[in-house]
Image 1 (spheres, rainbow, N blue to C red):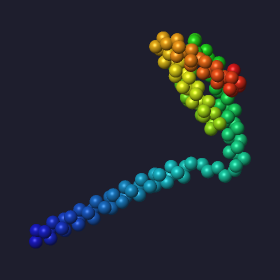
Image 2: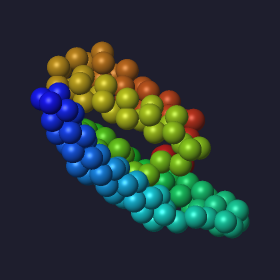
Image 3: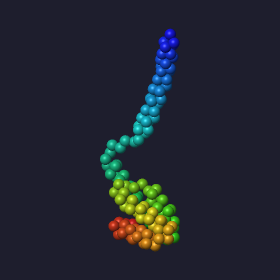
Length: 136
């Protein structure tokens, strides 16, 4: 009799807990579905191409303006952060990474008063300006 009573309690508990768990699962799915549905779909390939060109042009202009700042008279960390805040087109990912790494190296060299590290970082920046003349 006691085992029958225990099994009844177990069944009642399971029947109460299962619907609560299922409701939680369905609610999570609707949140995910809403966030996926809120992403705009782009069907026009021409718009995509224009957006890439526009993004590349904006990146070049903004990066050029940021690099006009002189690292000797401006905080290198601020310059690096401004570059990190940019939206980077795929075409310039390599450049972007190299710039950030060079500025980070420059920042570390200045903080440690390591002239060798500073010189290497400045040489890397000059090399990038040679590879990408629009940076000047």
